[in-house]
Length: 288
Ligand SMILES: [Zn+2]
Image 1 (cartoon, protein in one colour):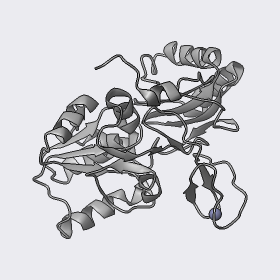
Image 2: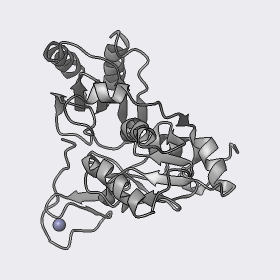
Image 3: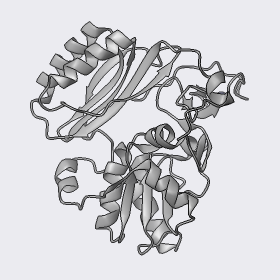
Image 4: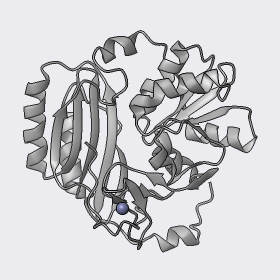
């Protein structure tokens, strides 16, 4: 990798004071209300904002704060037997993209199977992680793979891989039906090696093993999702930006906010310095 910064990195070299972290872990959690209360109190004391989802299958984390606040929050996870060494991916922004701290209990940390999700997940084969640099090489050499975007249509409008297939879904809970339709219509093939991707990897943790269970012969998931792909490769073969589920709405290939906003009325991403055609005032987006 060349060490010389190019013009675009120089343009973006103004330091941004807010650290955003996201991560997840699938691990069996017990006594969720006790854990919720403990975590809520500990994180509230650090001053971070964001959303944590807890389920008996694991944890999904999206937090934001100053460097010191985030380090304190990370220490809380580090000190907790279930969350040690959890991979918290970082990006920076000028402002905090959350309005409050929420620690919520759900059936699943990412909705896919409904009740009984963790048992079903355990019965499925593991889908290997594919590191971003390997994927970039595969794309460079034009390898014959299906690159499957597991995200929703409104996210894909912000950007995706130039050669990605997608399912035109509005919610991840529609993923399973959409795959079955795509197979029956011949838009996807069980025999072709398939690489799935989503923002940070969590959806693919459900989607890829489920696809193997459905008879796909070879399924990989991008390690750390699109955000890690951007960090590791600079976003080669990607067209546009990446939608994120907080007030940043989109980040570019350097993981910086693009300035886009979200119209909650039209459910649309609005480009930087634009207003929605509905003229409705733009309001903050909430992950849950
Ligand atoms: Zn609108």
